[in-house]
Amino acid sequence: MHFVYIVRCADGTLYTGYARNPRARERAHNSGRGAKYTAGRRPVRLVYQEAFRSVGKALAREYVVKQLTRAQKDALVVSGRRRHH
Figure (spheres, rainbow, N blue to C red):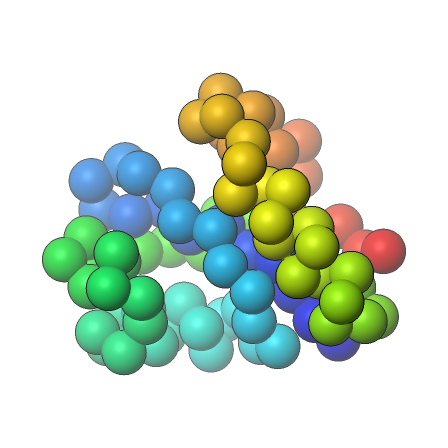
């Protein structure tokens, strides 16, 4: 499976990414091996994920989610932690 995920950083900001294993990616972010953005905003907490069968669909969805406003991302987080496509 392929996942689009959102983590909430210690400063309250949200970071969206792609991973094969969102929990492992959360650990990577928290160990400083994640994105530059999250390195200075640790700890992060996984707050949302969507699962996809294909990497192409996951990456396309990641692009869409990254374009959303903060309010729209917050609504996604509130709507549910896990979605499968």
